[in-house]
Length: 50
Image (cartoon, rainbow, N blue to C red; front, side):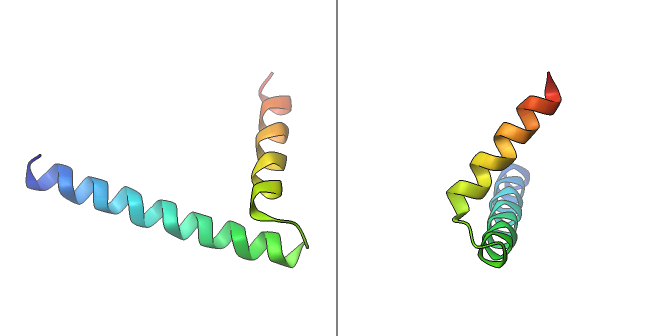
């Protein structure tokens, strides 16, 4: 892996962690678990996607 690839991977990991933190906070606010929120997002997304 060259330096650019390493930077990209690092960035992706950081963004993913930030999104997970946001979603976890959102889940706590609404009184659901993180996995419950993810499941809800996925089902909503796929229902709208079809």
